[in-house]
Image (cartoon, rainbow, N blue to C red; front, side, top):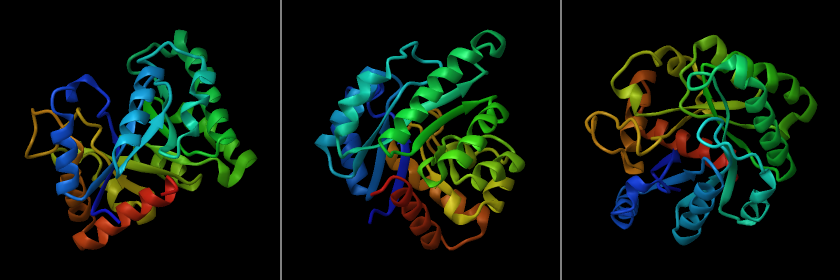
Length: 255
């Protein structure tokens, strides 16, 4: 079992083209595993290829609601056959970067296609949501009644309130937190009140590097800072928190 688990990174992005091997060596040095996440077909394919090449790295394949206008989910049918593909996404809804009035139906239909794909292939969802938690819950809550335990996943980079978090936890969707929690206090209430089995750690690398790396490119080995901050906020023993965060990831993603 690794010491740390970054459940959401983008090692497939061009930001890592120059030193990917060194970044992966730092993962080994810190005993950290990560899931590389796609945002369209090409980045999903790249995520799978990286995962298949290295131990301790896994892939998530899917279509981001904003970054891509792709909608052909059938393209992913070959990728999902890989044992290293552990989730579908990042998929979801985003009304921060798009106008809800004009883009809601497109985003909803794209999301539902990926939910169906995840159910078909028995994979959890990696959900991206921005300014869209109420709309997302309206979709997922009735679907949970219909599909039960097979419908499961994680709300990546959670930035909602405690009431919203509780509704996600109630349908067995966990919430993950990034390095942002090391320099703002907005998420402390959710982290303090979360059932320990409902939270996970992530970096969203190359974005939002934690303290003490702010302003620099983020990378998965920095997830230790997130784990330490979660333990601090919850006033828990660090080793206990580390173990729970890794166990939660392994359970959700079937590792």
